[in-house]
Image (cartoon, rainbow, N blue to C red; front, side, top):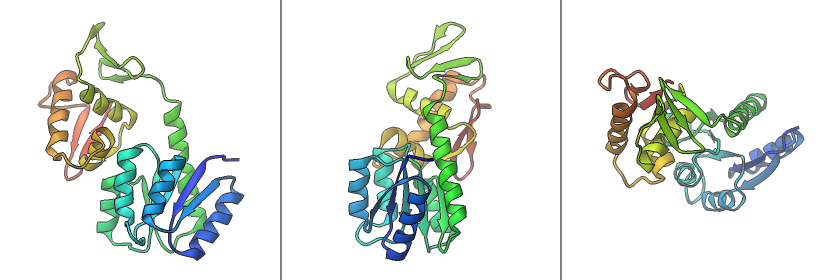
Length: 227
């Protein structure tokens, strides 16, 4: 049975009571908050394994809660629950850093399946190998060392953090906003910062930086890493 903690930030009492019951029956520890400020405070105090987050909340809305969560805890899975089913809201939530999005009214079995899938990915990441490949180079996350053919490749601290995030999320289209939140933990820099740093990684790790094979541009979104 699961033993992870799920934080539910939702202002609809009927949804809260239903999810508290069903998540508890699934074996999860459940915390809840009915407004954005309280939800963010509970997340900071208890570090839940998963957050279920409504967009339309009293006070601080769900998207602002998500931005702050991503600055503080970029790896915690977040699934947005919202009656606002417009495509723009979904895209914005995913760009900010949500892992998934499900519109109300939703199927309980589908939501539970998505929770299980997100937490399973998180468990796999927590037991991931320390050494990753980027073409013929190796990235040692524990030693913070990048090398090719036995020779170390010099990396600044920020370059290594960005590289680490890429190698931990292979094959996923990562928005510039998500990378900025995860690596810089701020929204005060321009998105051009990401482009500049990806250019540096390409120059150090790509056989041909002008024709990248590993750090690929995803038009209109950001970048995707392919080992």
